[in-house]
Amino acid sequence: MLRWRRSLQLGFLGLTLVAVFLVGGHAERWCPFGGVESLYAFLTEGQLLCSLGVSNLYILGGVLFMTLLLRRAFCGYVCPVGAISEETRRLGRRLGIKTFRVPERWERWLSWLPLAVLGVILFITFRASELLFRGFDPCYALIGRHGEDITAWAYVVAGGLVLGSLVVTLPFCRWLCPFVPVLNLFSRFAPARVRRDTERCRDCGNCRRVCPMNLPVDRVREVSAARCTSCLECLDACPTAAQGSLSWGWSRGRAVRWPRPVL
Image 1 (cartoon, rainbow, N blue to C red):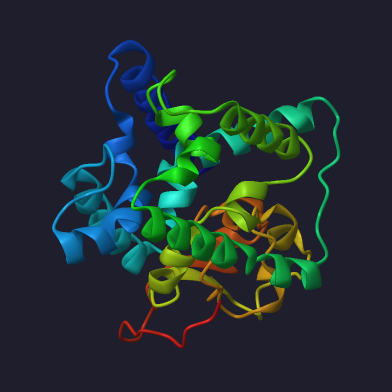
Image 2: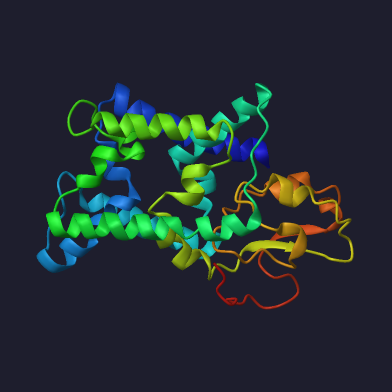
């Protein structure tokens, strides 16, 4: 599982880099969060902000539909920033850098930070009718047209996140990404999820230790948290997954249901 997921991540990352640096394309119009930033202006004024296009709205719709079915699979398989962060953490492990795990209590509080970041960005964007945040956006430092609207701060923030990823798994995706609250609204209703058979589980805790989102997989019957990225790392780490201790997908032996929302 991990090999084909990593292949998808690196494939989308490579496609982005080729489009920006070799083809000279405007990859900013591929960003689904651009659709979020421009949605209000599009609905009220019939126009998009700055250099964004209708493609941002189409891609946003596709990502949200995928999230409604497969949880935050966009984060775990498609997002180039997530791919860079995961590759950096792998490098950190090869260098012998121990992963810093945030206590679960802190994780719950920190998981609300993206909502505050989103609120600030949307407020500034709506007031100015311009994408002022992109001057500090590490994502824009990757997909934007370099030398135009990117400030040094975007590279500073991006560099800080890369350094942080040497020690912490997915710090930007877990605590700072403004797209996370939007995805969580849809992810929490997704029927596809990891389920744990308590009778076959050995309580080894491997699934919890490898979870990049620091979810307590070993203590729940099913992972219903909205921030699950469907990476399936827990299934690969489970010594009894082949016997059904951990499974992923829709409910087996019962109708598909839309479960109670959980953050």
